[in-house]
Every structure is written in structure tokens, then in C-alpha cells.
Image (cartoon, rainbow, N blue to C red; front, top):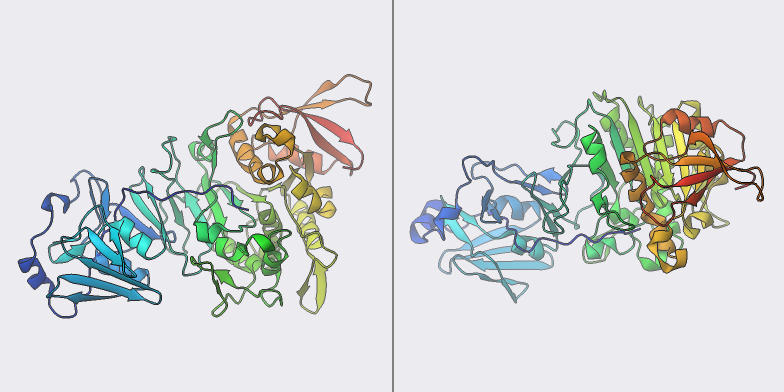
Length: 519
């Protein structure tokens, strides 16, 4: 489910180099004076900015990106070709034309007015030529290709999300020290086996967040992040993990998880993709930026297999970090269990030390079964099998039920192998009935709780007896794995119920009642 809509930066720029078909670069340089030549070099003390497309840095041979007064410029041929364009040059008109199916971009050297599919578009900086390479403003390039563009001030990175190709995988994040807003987004880079990653260190512990159903996210170009600004908090909830030496990642599978609003209640079509690449509902179709689905060249593997493959690329090779944690929300909790079970069955050498399920969701239909091999299997039962397998291998498992949505899509079999908590987020308003927000916002509460004192456990044997403090703590990101496993290995119907602290986003003032009975 989409939580945050992160906007693009209006003042950024990219630069681009052109393929010349009727003249050479030197003739262009001679005939067209570079515009504002003071913009054509980086400060000697500042490295060239990075440009990433779908989390992977572009490699430039020759001319490098330049940050000039907030406008990031890159060689045009590299970026346009990466976004699927063919580029041509008209010497007489001093005009560049970039074309691909459904999109034509025209621009002129020295002119801030360009055309996208025939309509005039104004650029902050006119295209100019330096050292034989044509440079153009990035906001224009991103809009013309129907991409989303972010800027990360700390790592000096332009991040372009291109939705006309399928993108999924583990994106590792930089910290974000401030709360500047949308002009400075959090830097991230996708893990690609064999490539260095600025935000991933294989010797450090790692925490991964797996998002869930994402209706409407592709067309709106929105992605879940770590910011929480409700209930008295205004922080990037992953910062505490970064400050304590952790790698932090999100497993993005947005284009596969977006079946639209009509298919999100419940998201049976998305769930089918998690388990069965040959499902008869929607196959493995994925959504493009224009809202249409791609139904050819679809993945041959289910999402759980894609997750398992990428997971093992990271953790089956040279990873030596002390701990792995995975946090799955909503349908992402479903995927977490399915993906980890798949990784286990494929011989994963490192399982998580802890799995946190935040309002996990299994489709509550009588036919919520998937074909695996020659038979049908209920998805919630497969989740339970994974929980039992992880438990047998020493993984701590905690299960937070936070909303009516999680109640409707719960798995009793998973819960019985977990440290189970009824969790409240009344600070979200609507008299505690804002179930869509209660379904997702507690993820950020949980992550931020790493910086807070673990909640206190209280107990009373009956309703007319006062609560007493047991001396134990309850579930939060600051609670030890050993304490979570104690609760997993207790009586089958023992669980925690959130009593105090429901009106704030911090977990430091929370108290949970230890209960016996059927949850």
C-alpha cells in the first residue's frame, strides 16, 4: 500500500550528450559558443555528482556530470540512450531530436523552450555545448521520459526512476540528517551483484523493509520511504539504524504490486504473483508509467522467487555482517515469509536472525490457494510453514496486528509461531478508525523504536485486579532477539495487548499487558 508520495525536485538538472548524424562534435563547438561557460566544470574540491537510473549509477566515458548552481548536467547521449531514445542532430537548425515509441523530444542549442510531443516546455537552463558535448537540463529530460527525479544533497546524486522497464530489488539507503523536505530526498542505490554499492557494507548488520500492495503508485510515481511526521515525531526512522552501523534497505517491487485500486481490496491478483508465475488471473504483468500493463516479456519467476534470488545474491556470498533483520508490512509480510521459505528451500546460507511482521496480510478468501507443483496450497498456511521453519532455525519472529485490515488478513498459524502483539496507533485520528494509516504507519514507529526504551510488560490475573509490572520488556526494535524468542516459546495462547501510549508515535511510553487466552 502506498504511504508517501515523494515529489521531484524542480531545480535539478541533468546533462546529456548527443549522437551526431550529420556533422562532428568539433564543428558544433566551433559554430555554437558554449552558454555560460562558467557552468562547465566541477569545483576542484567537489566530486562529480552521480546519476542513477533505477538505482544503478550511470557510467560516463569522457565528459562527466557537472553540478552548476544546482543544475546537474550529464552527457546527453548516455542518459537519453539509457531511457530508450534514439537521438539525431540537425546542423542547420542547431536542433536535437530524441525519439522513442510514444515520445518525441525536440530542443535547440541556446533556447530554453523545447518541445515534448509538440507542446512547448520551458527549461531552467538552455542546452549548451562544451568541449564538443551538448548539455541539457535534467528536469526536462526526466519529464520528457515520464520519469521521476530525486536529488540527494548528502551524496550529490540525481536519482531517476524509469517506469517503462521493470524494476525490482534491494535498494540500500543513505542516512538523511535533516528534515529539509522534498528538495533533498534520501539517497539510495540498488544492490547489483559484483558492483560496489556506496550504501552497503558486507561486514555490517543489515535490516530490510519489504513493502506491500501498491495501488496507484506507478502512475503517481510514489515510493515508500522511512519518514514519519505524526504523533509528535518528525524523523527519518532509519537514521538510528544507520548511526548504529547498520545497512538499511527496502525491497521494491512496485510495478508488480500495483494492480490498481479496484484490485486492492483484497489484493488477490498481487498475491497470485507472489506465489505462481503461471497464475491465470494476471500472470506476471507489470505496470508502466502511463498506467498500462506490460504482458509480454514478463518475469518467468514468481515474486517470492525473485525475492529469494536477490536475497541470496547478497547474503550467500561474501556477507559477514553479524545480523540480518527483515521487516514486512501488509502484503509485504506475506511476501517476506514466502520469499524466505523459498530461499531456505534453495539452500540459503544465511537466514534472518529476526523477522518482524507489521500487520501482515494474506488474502481472506475461501479460495486463497495457489498452485505449487501438482497441488493447491493455502497462502496463509505456507506462511505458517515458513514461521515454523524459521523458528526451528533460531530466528526470532514478532507479529504486530495494527488494524482491521490486518485482522481480516491474519494467519493464525504464523501468529502461533511468533511473539504476537495487538498494537494501537490512536494518534492517527478518526477516533482510532483510520485503518489504512494504521495498517502502514506503525512500520515507521517500529523502526524508530530502535532509539527508544523497550515498552514495559504489565499483568493482571483478572479485570478487577490492578496491573503490576512484571519486570520484563515487550516487543520493539530495541528489544533483544532472545526476549522475542522467550515469548515465542511460551504458552501457545500468551500474547501482548497494547494498553498505554497509544496516543503517541513513540514506543518509549508504551505498556503492554501480558494476556492468556485466544487472541
